[in-house]
Image 1 (tube, rainbow, N blue to C red):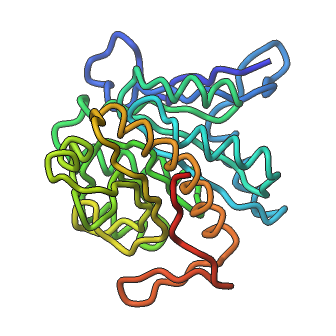
Image 2: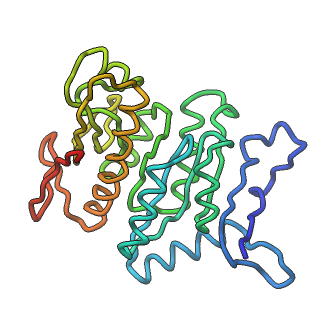
Length: 266
């Protein structure tokens, strides 16, 4: 049985002034009071945080905007390899994000926090930080989170905020990477996992994957090939982090014990 948690206290669906509070966590399996009443989110959060502390389990919070396929790849890899990790929550800035459905199906707490309900970027990021901090994550994973984050947000999670980008950084930061790679005539394209810094798609690179650009490729064909590799390297980067194997040295990331940080499409 899956419990759907109530809206945060003080918010009513018919009260437009309460829109900043009117978000809903859901996704917990089998957590109910007697009589079928859902257990409050704050009690559930406190229970999860305490449990993680007791058993020494790492906690991950993931931010998404859409289907969250990289988030799904990380969860499925963790299940297959039996990681000692708690996926403490998934937050989407778009209520219609399909990745929320996957989270709920796995019993992972899911929250839609609509950025359009906030007057500016800073106000949204403050609300987002409040929700993330409730879950006390060891790592915050950006998995297709299509928002430029404020410097305050990035500094708040410095050293434990990572992102994946569909290009071989520092080439092609920003949007439309596949179209730009084809226009530039490069023979090799790919994806990069990196720590987040205050520059857009900057920060120390954890690992990369290369894919060939084939004759006649469309942007969609190239994107599909890159996404296949994203699903391989993002779980690896997350696991390295959880295992304490990453060291930031200047603007580079080293893995200890040493292991290749470059992967190639076969």
